[in-house]
Image 1 (cartoon, rainbow, N blue to C red):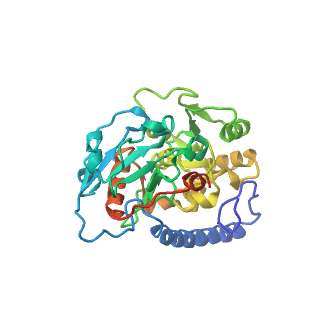
Image 2 (image 1 turned 135 degrees about the vertical axis):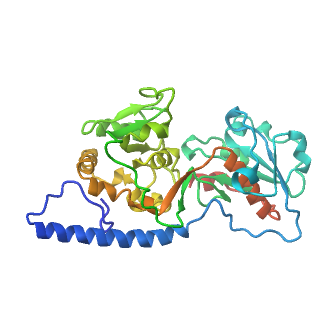
Image 3 (image 1 turned 120 degrees about the vertical axis):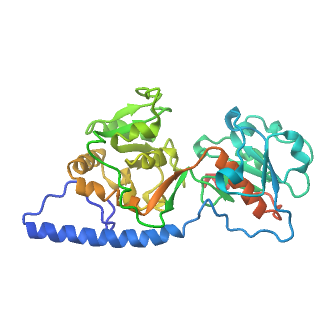
Length: 364
């Protein structure tokens, strides 16, 4: 485990005297309370995907027209009313390409344009029109970036340094601490550990880690790569019956923290994560909100810690206490993306420069 973080470490023997045990527990409680207070202050200063810090250009019309060039993955979805769903005004969304000449911005999903570069608009780009590159896959699954150097004006991804930043989920501070926000652990969560996975490949680091972990603790594997979910259930509803969830990313890159983690948090489980380093997760989450596989020298010690938490509800609550101060928001694909982009375009109205090094930036 990380030293100085207040984490309990598996393998520690119980103190021989009650006095030492009480003293150690008191120190952990005091340290944990101070840590959560300081972290809460820091989280409030993180980039908020709901607020793009760019001033409006004076004298410009309020409404902007955003043209969706292709529906992501070829699946048609009805375009949202941004004001009704997200309180974002001044946005006109359309997927009618006849609107191209008058659109303020075009949003293009990488998957559709990478297979055919001629899928880009063939007509001259109207003056001042913004082209937005939207991608929520990791660099390991993003091909052909070299084709688009100097093409786009804005980036929209899960990376915090994107022009338009929208993660897969985020925490929303509660105005008042919520005493009833902690999920019940027993008997409503009778099972220990689950992993819902659809894309299984033996070459993935997450599969290799699972192969080692399952030697020491039972893991229920569900989804297309395991036992199918019940037809009347969802991932979140299923995970609510477990204490822990394996939130293992298919590749490890900066800020690539997907719905796997946010689904488990929404379900009230404690996520066990494999992805970018712990400090990357801590940009978006309290340190006790998750368990990182790198906290343990081996899968065996991680398994021992999970079993210890199941036997010790007081220790488990340390991974849940942050819920009194924050609620979990799961990003609404793709409606929230379009409306967030529209708001950002309004604030970037005067920006016309293109991105000369898209591939180098995204793969860094």
